Length: 123
Image 1 (cartoon, rainbow, N blue to C red):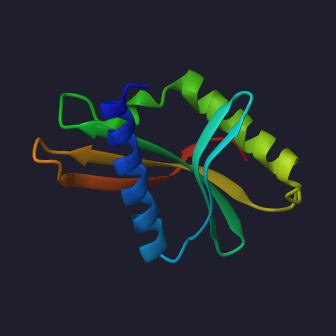
Image 2 (cartoon, rainbow, N blue to C red; image 1 turned 120 degrees about the vertical axis):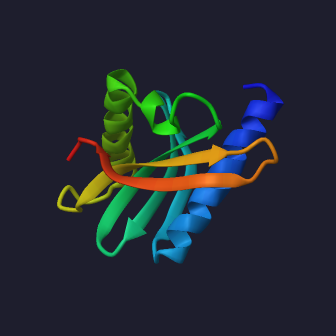
């Protein structure tokens, strides 16, 4: 990933992590990787595990969350199951997959940050 794009993604992930923290979530992992891909953020809200895909875009004709199509959704669900298996989380643990959409204006300021809960079916 080119450095400008990587920096934009990192900026969005930082903003998403702060957003979750201010709402009482506990951040468990960031950029968790396995052979099939990466989960941007893993957090806990009460007894529920929350897998978060962060999509950051400069303002344009498309909203960031629109880039999570069926193929990406299936990969996110597979990543969630892999995380649960590899980390030994109980099968009884409730979980969900959210998307946090972050839009940035040309000045580098956040103009929109929206958390879409249960954005991907998986559990």
